[in-house]
Image (cartoon, rainbow, N blue to C red; front, side, top):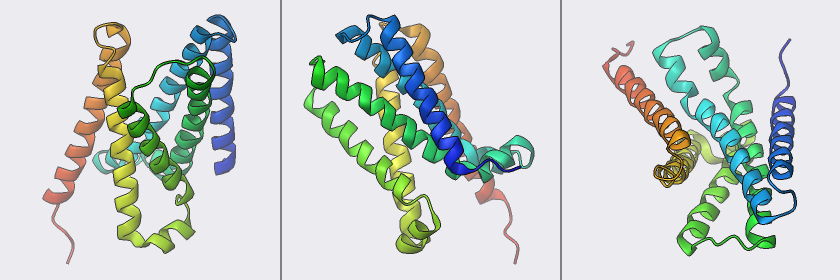
Amino acid sequence: MRIPTWSIVVASAFAALCLGVGWTVASGGWTHEGALAGARITARWSFIWFLAAWTASALARLWPGGWRGVLLRRRRAVGLAFAANHGVHLVFIFMAVGVFHEPRGLPVLIGGGLTYLFIAAMAATSNNWGLRTLGPKGWKILHTAGGLMALIVFTNSYAGRLMTKPELAIPALSLIVLAVGLKLAATAKTRLTPQAA
């Protein structure tokens, strides 16, 4: 039985909310530290969904079939789940910044805000209407640019923790390097594979 897309999106977002609330309560509740804890755990949860969506086509191209094929077929649901999870993360960011005045520099606010706009645009066009409206080329440009922006934000975030939390930053950055390597390998395989006449 095929699980509906909306079920995957809602369940993953609910899990993000439970994680965020749980970490907030465990770290002081309605406090500055509690809000930051909720923001951190929801970002990490969202990161997993992002990597799954971003590498789905590369994995299926390099190793067709099996769970990679399933992931590719459900990539739209996984991508929408990432967008929903990152929306939950945004709630905790608003709590930390807007309520408890966590400082954020202007470049972070602009870069993060622009990335959220791209994520929202990708979510809004992750359907047949969006593909028809933008056309295959426009749709690919939007989703490629949005994916790269999200990748840059995650990379910058984890790179900034290399000195303070290497036990978190090193595995996350290793996954990012692996994901980029998979994308490059899949692109190389496509270019080297003879096209049928």
